[in-house]
Length: 160
Image (cartoon, rainbow, N blue to C red; front, side, top):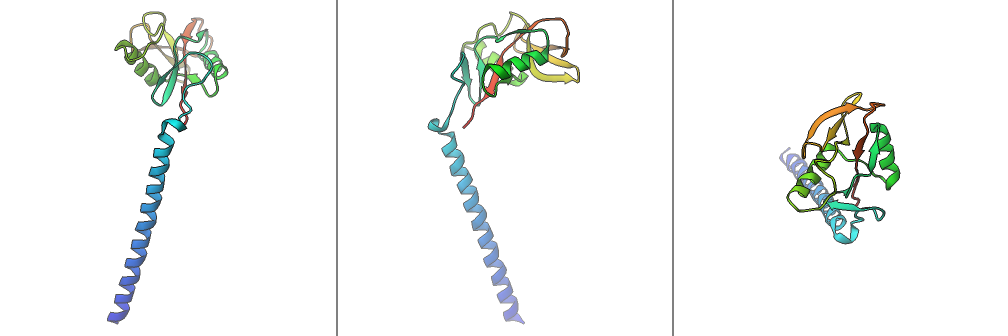
C-alpha cells in the first residue's frame, strides 16, 4: 500500500512539474513574441497619408479633419480618411491635448478654437464634445441632425 501511494505521489509530482514547465515555456514564448512585436522594426506606425502625430499606441491627426453637422457623419469621414481611422476617444483626445499643452507634441487648433466631436457616447442620442474650454469634456451634443456643425479629428490604433 505504501509503495502504491509513493508511486501515485511521484506520478502526480511528475505531472505537476510537467504542467508547470509547459505553462512556463508557453508564457516565455508569449513574452518573447510580445518583445519582438514591440521592436521598432515591427511598428507599422501612423498612416502615410495626411499629417498624423504619433502618441505611443495611437496616432492623432495634427489638425481637425473638418467639420460635420452630425456625429455619425464625422465618424464616417474618419473611416474614409485613412485605413482603420475613427473618431478619437475622449481619453485619446485628452492625452493629445495635454501633451500639446506641455510642448511634447504640436497639434493645430486643439483648444480654444471650436468644440470637437469625439467617439464617446454619453447617452444613446448624445455624444461627448470636447476642446472649447481646454483639455476636457465640457458637454454633449445630439448625435443626429443637431444642426450645430462641430469640428473633429481622427485617430488610428498603431499596429505592431
